[in-house]
Length: 567
Image (tube, rainbow, N blue to C red; front, side, top):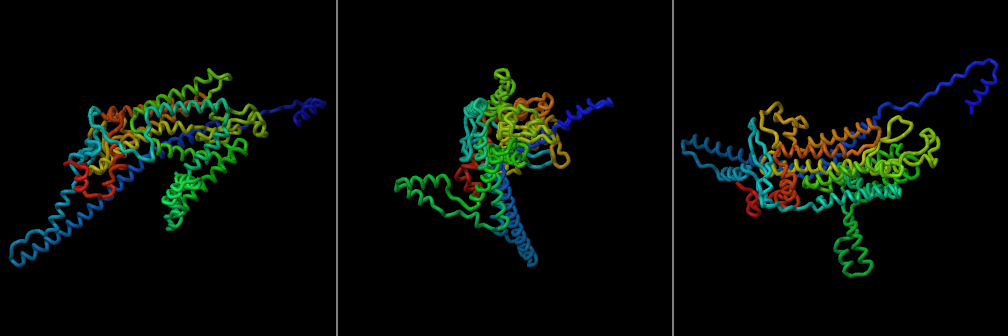
């Protein structure tokens, strides 16, 4: 209105001075820095989730190394005391001009124990697998190292697998079923627009994951540091015997009590506090999601959403295990075409040329009204939509008045993350079996030829992949993690260049799966990796079946019971 008045006044005036109008465009950043941040966040989440999936192997290996060092110190002390006794005996005999007395019985028994506890030189044979797992060799520098040699897959003996009760081994049928369920869910969301239901389910599901991954371990660590153990004690609200007795008596009350016991079980004050804090955060996040328009611009909302995604990825890879790259190849190849179809092909099939994946990820697509109008009137009907669906990582674009976010789906992390988790568990299982075999647990890849030891004790090799995290010393996990980072960087670059959403699995699957296959082929372990590595089966049998090493049985007792150690 003011501008029109100025124009009319200029027309009515007799001076004839022209009215000069200069239009300015609002500032928008030239570069999208949130894309770099979402790339770094995706790489970090994939690394920490897959690294955390092998934490049990790592803890057991460290415990065995600590026990071996303690036993070695005790043996050294006994040998030292025996040597002092012998020197004192020899000195007294010399002074008296008599013959030398025989060594003491304690020295003999100490030496016998030391010989018995020397690490076997030919390897370790696990009783359940019936196959040699590791060999002890000496490098060019004289250092001892334990390396894994995969046996031929033609061997008739198959290892007996002891499964982790808290995990699920992924099979080929699971992989195909997972893709079918994902496609069905995507189509239901596209046609029925039930985004509110997804937010509610996601909030409550992720609150439990938040309690399990962050809140509960943090509270336990805090109370242990301040040495206050009362919240860690179990609340005696009911015993298992009481619940069973009530169920045997029958009746509605008895069935309710046994169901309540099976659902809750033993509980402590720290468990209650963790659940209250986690579900309180989830309820607050849900309130912001429903009551504030475009909540993705609020820091609390998208930060909590990303923390929820982190916890879900860690819990997923901690629960779902991939024990053969044959299953991983089926899953990733099917997901590869699934991602391409719903991003690039569905615009040719839908009525308005919409990509189903992009439409669902943005809760129905971007707003129809102008961004400047929506900035003034966010409650307008044409300004609704465009909010990222919770099942992804989101970082708002920095300094852009038009809004928008850089997005990364959880599936782009957990699906390649299964392969990353497999590589991490495979490496740690080899280290663990090497420690059991009496070695130091230092691992080198069979695909890297022996070479001179360089500065810092690192192996030099002509393998072109050895510049990636020193794969001759670090196994598969390091190079595959670098391949994941490169693939995700390519996906983000494609979004920037083409100015449209990209199927990240289009770039991630060839990078990650190709790296594992290439390294397995060069190392001569591809057949073993394809069918399921024996070393992972043996490590799981050690973790969840044969507890003799954890309990600290003597070597003689263990050999008599299992026949695990061979000379």
